[in-house]
Image 1 (cartoon, rainbow over the protein chains, first blue to last red):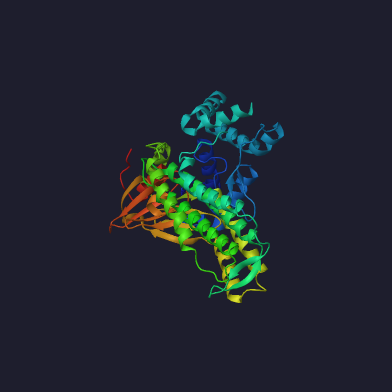
Image 2: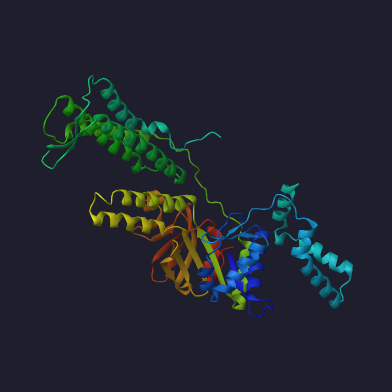
Amino acid sequence: MLIVIDEKDPRPLYQQIAAQLKDQVLRGEMQPGDELPAVRELADDLGINLHTVRNAYLRLREQGVIDFRLGRRARISRPRETGPTAAEAERVLGARVRELVADAYLLGLSRDELRGMLDRYAGDDSCGTAHHDSITEDRR
Amino acid sequence: MKLRLLHPLWTHLPSMAALAILIGALLSSGNMPAEAPVHFGPGGAPDRYGSPWAVFGLVIVLSAGFIILSIRLDELWARQERQKTFNHFSLLDELIVGAMTGHALGYLNLILQEQVLYAAPVREMLWLSLPAVAAALVLERLRPYTGQPERLDPEDATALRRVLARTTRSGLAFAYSDIQNPAYVSLLSLLLPAGIFVAAVLQAATMPVWSTLLLVLTSVLLASLYGGLRTSVTREYITIHVGTPGYRVLRLRPADVADVRLRPFMPLKEFGGYGVRANREMSAYYLSGGTGVLLTMRDGQKHLIGSNHPERLAAVIGAAAGLPAES
């Protein structure tokens, strides 16, 4: 697992860590069952506060990306058998999608251009969508 | 699912034959006394009596257990070898089972002849173990090679190399974590210490205090290995930690690394097992697998680091050390 800390990135550090880990899961570089480093060890390696790493892990656990229980090492969760309900999708993604749409509007991006951009990222091989597709395929 | 053994079972026939000879001798021994000396003092005089079947039962169970362990060990060897190599471990079960069953035969003669004093049955031990070891030596030489000559399966580290190139160019802080924590380590670091701890508590009343403390200390040390082996790479250090307390077993500066390359290895043949090991050429750190990352330092020292993703680990260390990427 590779975590890079970019001080120029406007996002808080815990969000950077969480986003990179999710990206590695999406790419298939991190597989279900793979262990994550202990909070203290990762914090030491990155030279950051351990609460920052803990926050990232807690956020990932809330999103179901990792399994993280007291006394046990954090691991990448198994993919869900069923897709999310509409309410769940709204709870997890709603706010971020609304913010994305607002940012696109303020940037002057048309609806089609935004849709094209989403399609491009979702279909980009470098994002490991082959791995993602295989998960959704399994669910069917 | 059919279990296919790469190390054929017939290589264990000599130790099985030694055990069969003991069982045959017991079955044909006629009247076994209900009570016989089962323990002897330093002078050879019996100091405890009991059922001789308990002694023979223990020898049979231990011998069978050792044969099973040996089958597992030899199979591990066969799965690691990339060409036919002589497996010295394959002689171990013949040596130990031969000596144990030979000793049991000597004991059988002793109680059947109602001898008063114990003397080590060297003749029976040699008579069973030497031919067994000689036969095992021949069988190990005859054993065909059924493994896979080249099992180095390079994984694609291109995406990672791209990220690393960006990261090192921008001078950003990073941490790469590589964890080896196979299931057997969790089992050994939970079940074994629990068993030793229970044994320590049970024997506390009858044994000296130092032996109880030694057992408790051993169980605590074994339990502390829970968590396996973690390699982390940052701009400043390559560090290997072991166990829950995070014992630091290696720390290197990437700037001191002169060369990084993938190296297939045979854990049993080259280092005699798993864990933190060393041979004359290098130190080694691994809990599973057969391909590691070999680091050659500027002072000539060599360190072999095991990994479940050696391609990625090599790419990260190479980038941290500022070495050109191989591909």
